Image (cartoon, rainbow, N blue to C red):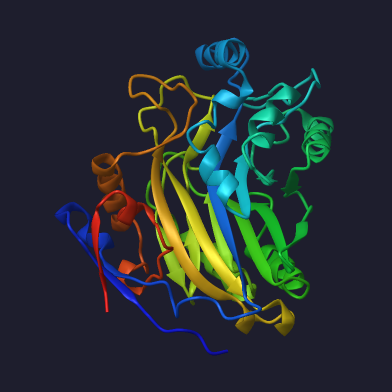
Length: 360
């Protein structure tokens, strides 16, 4: 369809982010009549509890008592409410079940913690992770019920989430690396691809505390794209990893933690918020050619608003710290060149004066 053409190119002002320098564009300009856009926001691990009796759990419960549930997402609420779909990895059940599974660390949050999500514009939780079953199937089932009661969707453990947003059929799937083979993931993705306009795949994978994605992640992530995924979102390592643009689709290998009460003061509090805007013409029906990338935004953040401890309040980084993190992400990002990326309008780099805009 005809579209007004214009492009914007940006040059990084700071040498420390030259690895992410390149062209900024809004694509072909304003959407033609009948075209709709959807902006997706994805963040990492949300754990609204620590182990029973742990320092982090005590501190989190004290924060709930003193500040209330709406306190935790105060610094990102506006961002989440401005998009069309916000996705978090909910790591740990929201349940009253008493008997945990006998394995390592176990997490269990009060079901009332759902208010943290419900009041902040979170519409979808990935439950495909290694803590959702800490209190067995009963705990997972109650978590799903608690989310549903507040209008929050979920995916993972054979459950797909589907919804129609602005006339666009969106589906999200969730998988863990230890429960699914590459073949099983690709089969499920290919099946889901037949019935939606936009397909998001959440993958819980990789090695904890490792910034570099491993071969198994690359293999599974690319296989998901080959099978029809439009965006692959990774979690589990508890730290950021790289980003890859593969066959025109983004694979975000790890977003890191986000609102994480499992650790009172982790050494690395940095994390990523990833956004992507897609444009569609609903009248075209389901077709890969109907999905157009309308830009990404990589927002560096911290799981805490203070440096000396974890206060469980995710906060977008100021320019200097954010630039340093983006440089490190770029160094982990094979197959991603910012010059080849289409960037969302009002992205983090522009808003923080890290890049200079020039229209032509």
